[in-house]
Length: 375
Image: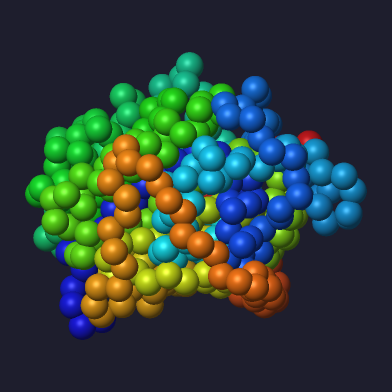
């Protein structure tokens, strides 16, 4: 890239698959389902989505049996128009996948640092674990870059990291609006319910929180030197019609990675419109952060060796800012005739590998994660 990116902002929302959220993108040639029932907003239930539920869904998908997952789709244009606008004007990563096939915490940790010692959400009734794993924010600080984690009340998920827990750089999620005039190099943003879009939330409220933050960055003059990455942590128990590659498995032989497809939108003044069909997991977000901010490897192979998406960033400004916060969103007109979806790319490996140990900052390891039985 000819010009350096000054800021990267990673938004992490909750619990939706690509089919569940982005039926609208089929008009642009994305490989998404279009004929499932329309999902009411807000949802009336929170579908099961732990590792056991994932395994049941996976085995049904592989055998051609009826899915136990919730097969519905939100009306993107009606309830998520800002997301629809971003997907149609920036980079829409059609085959982005959750890092692991399970629920929230492991996938948040995969985004923050490329690995997870657990396959479940630690019980909130017990003291929360703290691990001394490498992290993107800590790595940025070690190399002279500024960072902030904008979180909810519990500092989730960065409080799981010994290097980050208690840092003054962990602030309330709404603080990013005021900080937009003086952004750190790396911002990572999470929201409390109902703004995280986790069922039973009204998903439009979460979209609007992201929209407000993006708009603040635009108004502060940082649209052209910032790359935004917006994703969702895990599948949330919603169906997706695409079978993802089996590259990693737990000791019981059940696929762990890649998990189900979840949306990833990449946008900013230097991110042109593109439908990108390559396979990429949550660890690709971290690898892309390293490349965009000129950081060396983190020392976590799953992240350091992940596919980078930095090639989607152009040398010069290509894309105009999105509609101002609170305005009426007019969605772009899709191409005619509707493009056919790209064929699925070949899997990145031919043989699934056992999930490996977790690397700590002092060079020691923790056992591979295996704490969520599927039977």
